[in-house]
Length: 66
View 1 (cartoon, rainbow, N blue to C red):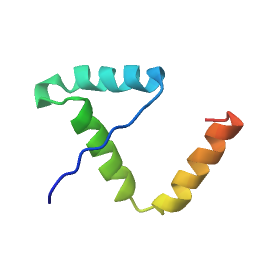
View 2 (view 1 turned 60 degrees about the horizontal axis):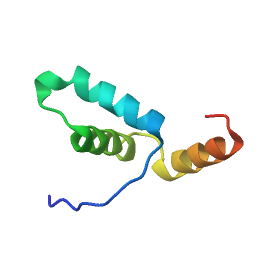
View 3 (view 1 turned 90 degrees about the horizontal axis):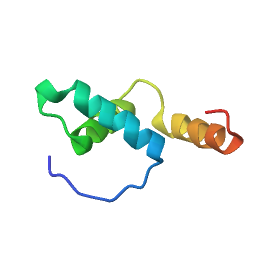
View 4 (view 1 turned 135 degrees about the vertical axis):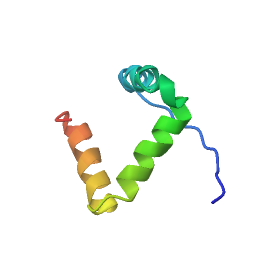
């Protein structure tokens, strides 16, 4: 499977959380890109409908409940 790069802007809180994950997964040679890719892969390939889930997340963020 080929890969495509794209830029993503995220809140500083998320960056800090991802950096903590990078530190915790140091033994696996993880970096930010790998962790974000793995999170997205798990999300998209999960049993739940990703479209419904993304819509729910977006609505909750806008309401400030996430």
